[in-house]
Structures are given as C-alpha cells and as structure tokens.
View 1 (spheres, rainbow, N blue to C red):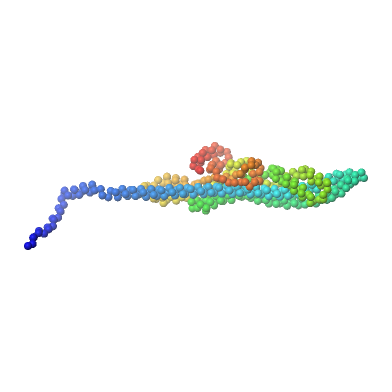
View 2: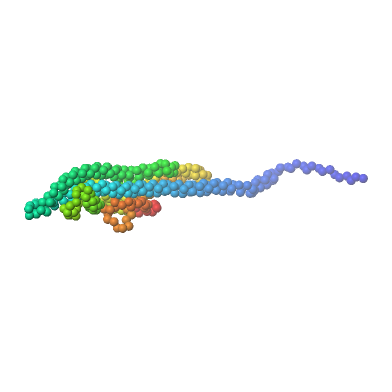
Length: 389
C-alpha cells in the first residue's frame, strides 16, 4: 500500500587532495574582492589632506587680511593724529595772533595820543599875541601829554599780560608739536597689542622719534600779515578812550599808526618765541609728512600642518611651511598727513588754516630711510611695489 522510498544517505566527507589545495591558492591570488577598500584608504587620506589644505588656505587669507587691516588702520590713525596736531597748531597761532593784536593795539593807541601831544606842542611853539590859536594849542598839548603818559602805562601793563599769555600758548604749541607724534605712535602700538590681538601681538611705528613737520617761525611774516592791520584798526578805536577829542588827535589818528604799527606788531615776532611754521625743508608728499606702521603677528598653522601630513603619510616640508608662516607674520602700511590747499595759498599760511587731512599712501620703503641713500631707496621701492599694496 505504501511505496517505499530510499532514505537519503549522507555524502561522504571531502577528501583534500594535493590538487584541491593548489586550486585554492590560485583562487586566492586571483580573487579581486576588497581591492576597492585599499584604494579607498588612499583616497580618504588624500581627501582629508585636501580638506585640511583648504582650511589652511582660508586661515592664511583671513589672517593676512586682518594683519593688513591692522597695519592700514594703525598707519592711518597715526597720520590722523599728526594732522590734528597741525590743525591745533594753526588754532594756537591764531590765538597768539589775537593776543599780539591786543598788545600792539594798546601801544599804537598810546602812540596816537603822543602824536596828538607832539602835534599840539609844535603849534604851541608859535604862541604869542600874534597867534591866539597857537596859545590854545598849548592847552591841548598839555592835556594830550598827560593822557599819553597814562596811555603808555596802560599799554605796558597790557603788553606784559599779552606776552605772558603768548608764552603760555607757545608752551602748549611746543608740547603739541613734539608730543602729538608720540601719541600717534602709541596708537600704532595699541592697535598691534590690543585692538587686533590675538592676530597681532605688537605694532611698530616709524619714524620712532621726532615731532610733526613744524618749527619756530623766526620771520616777520605773521606779524606783518596777521597782526599789523588788525592792531592798527583796534589801536585807532582804543585811542579814542585814552584822550579827549581835538583836531590834533584827529590828525594823529590818521598819520601815527602808519609810522609805528610795523614796529609795534613785529615786537611779537623775530626773537620772541611765539608762532609756529611748517619746516622750511619739508614739502608735502615727502618723508617728513609720511608715517608707517609695521605689524607682527603669530599665525597658528600647526593644526593645518598636522592634517596635511595625513595625506603625505607623515612627511612635512618644514622649510616651506616655516617660510609661509613667516611671510604671514609681518604686514606694513603707509599714510601721510597733508594740507588740503584749494586756493593756492602761500606756504606761510599752511599753519594758519585748519585744513590738514590724512590719507593712505602706497608703501614706499624709501620714505623710511635716511637722506643720502637715494639709490638704495629707489631699488627697494621697486621691490616693495611688487609685494605691497
């Protein structure tokens, strides 16, 4: 009723022969599975290196731009401080001129009263029965003479006060002239040590010493151009309060100032320390008006360098890395302060107007070298023009 089926019989165990072992070895050598993994390891290492390299390039660019920003900002701020110092000197010159006008005007007023007394006295010499007018002039001569003595006493007192005030303002002018550039240099150092830290760690200004391009004015130009005419006008007005009216006074107020105003005004020039002027040997655009800033930084490329070593299997061109790192350690910039002259003013007027400005200039290493090294400066300027903006 039931069909009998044979039960399965287990296969006999494989017999490993010499022929089968040789076949297995051939298949192992010819087996290509896993080859992509080896290639992938190399590609992954290269990709890691490229990523770190791109990261390093970005860091270099950012670091370099910030270094240059620090140098530009420091140089420009240094020039701005110097320009402000020149504007302050212009204001101080005008203040000293105002004091000089007052002092000279009081002396001119006294001279006018004295001139009236002299004129009346000359007419008085003809006094007699034959000239009643001449005798009346003697009264005017006496009155004007007394008034002149009082006027000179007042004028001398005012002159002493004006000289003291001018001396004080002159001291401030000297302090500004010599001290302001050091404040400008301090700003360069501050930008390097704090404003742009930690990208930069020190800022170096150039020149290291010296004031702005100004000096004592030992000429008579300020007194002739800025003091004489205003003192003449003010002295004529002030003289009216020093004596009584007369025809002799009227004649003196017209003639006397033209005789004495130059002498009275020049009292405040020449040997007297007062006004400031632009240095005689300094011309706009030249070295005395140039300022430079050098920034030292400390970029950290160690992390990038270690990542790039992954792709180079531990090899590192330290010479190239060190050179690139050193090149990014230094930045420099140049600026200048100048007089913005739109009306063709004379050189003497440059320190009588608040028109001093600051601007950036292309870096020229020759401006930082002493005079007499013209050929060297020219060659260095050609080189610096290739690497500096």
